[in-house]
Every structure is written in C-alpha cells, then in structure tokens.
Image (cartoon, rainbow, N blue to C red; front, side, top):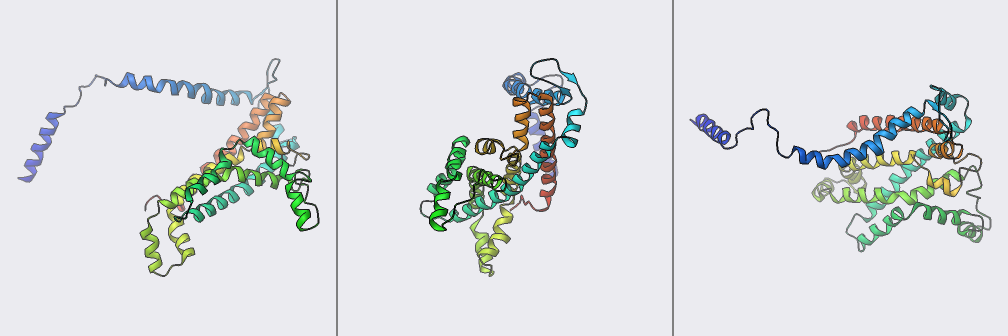
Length: 314
C-alpha cells in the first residue's frame, strides 16, 4: 500500500510540473548567451589569441620591423644549445623558486598561527601584515634598494653593532639573488597569511580540545589535527605561490637590473630583454613557451600529488 501511495505522489508531482516538449528552447537561453558574450570576447581577444599568436611567433625570426621568416624549432634549439644567458636565467629562476616558496609559506604560516588566538589587536595585525602586499612593488623595491645600498640602514647597523661594513648586497653576485628573495618575501607573504588565518579560524575548537584531553601538546595538536585540516588552503597557497615565483620580474628589474653580470636575470626578465630590448619577438615567444611548459608540468605534478596529503573532508 505504501508503494502505491508513493507512486501516486510521484504521478501527482509529474502532472504538476510537466517536462517541456522536445524541440522547444528555454526562454533564458538568449539572455544567458548575451551575458556570456562579453566574457567570451574578452577571453578570445586577451587570452586565447595571444597564446596562439605567441606559439606561432616562436617558430619565426620575428623582428619588430621587417618581414618575419619561418625558422622552425631554431629558436628552441638556440635556447638549449648555444645560449648561455638562457641557462643562467633558468638556473636563477629555479634558485629563486626554491628559496622563495618555502620561506614565504613558513613566514606566512608562522605569523598566521601567531595571530590565530583571540589576541588583542588581531585585526590590526592582519592589516599591518597585509600592507606590503598592497603597496606598489616598485615602491617596495626602491625602499629595499636604499636599505641594501652601501652606507644604507643595514650597513649602518652592521658598523654600529659589529664594527664592520655589511656585504654589498646588490653589488655582489653571491648576495644579490638572496637580497631579491628577501624583498619578494616581504612583498608577498600577506596574501598567504590571510589564507592561512582564515583556514585556522575554520578549524573546530572541539577537535583540538579533544586532542588535548587525549594528552596531545600544542605541537602535536598543530601537526596532527590543525595542519591536516588546513591542507586544502596550504595546497592552494603553494600552487599560486609557485606559479607567481616563476614569473618574478619587477623585483630584480628594479633592484639589480639583472646584475651583477647575469646573476639575478630571471626567465621573464630575459624574455623582456629579448623581445623589447633586442627586438627578437620570436625568440622571446620561445622563452615564454618554455616557461609555460615548466609551470604547467609542475602544477600538474602538484595536482597529482595532492591526492596523498590534501584532506577535503573534516
């Protein structure tokens, strides 16, 4: 009897909302297309077309003025065989990524944990730590250039405390890249701090309280309870930080101009020099595609690896 009643209810519901007949279109189709059209035009004009155009240009010797000539894979062959600057730029970019990403994550996570309790002035600390992220990067680079310069603030502190001069940070090939990394961390840790701070706020206090009752100390609570619950946010921050670190340009361009020598020349800076200073647009496009493939490969590896350590259920 109950089954018969359910069938009757289902039949009644079907009779109240009949399915549209075949061959008819819903009335909101045109409206939806009209809303999507500006975004689609923008995507084609500013994303899809430049991507395809740069791929085509990478197979040409494409001067700014003059007729392009097809060279096949010659630009890519030159990058990996006879161009020493590209190898140096690739190495500098890899070192920058290896230094910047872990330091950025550790600093932002540490500060987020520090302000996670309901301490007095917590909201002001968030604003204070986020100020460098919204400050123009050129301004931050100029300020750090004044700090790094001989007879600057850091050099004066060294002479006062230790009686010796500080290293010439921007004039030494050994110190220039770490100096760029430090300035970049100062500029970029604010975004990840907000992400981690929000993730910490979302951790249920009952879980840490239960762990404390079971005898877990603060360190064990963090690594066994809090950090696994934060793993989606940690994964998100790591992916975005890795991508942005491969695209570093303004910091070394303002602080060192790629020097001394080529010790701080990065891939994007070399791309800029090739395309807009040496006017080799095809060669610059080849650099861009090498960088694109590297970022895509590492991002894909991260997405494949996140299945083993990222937990989306609480």
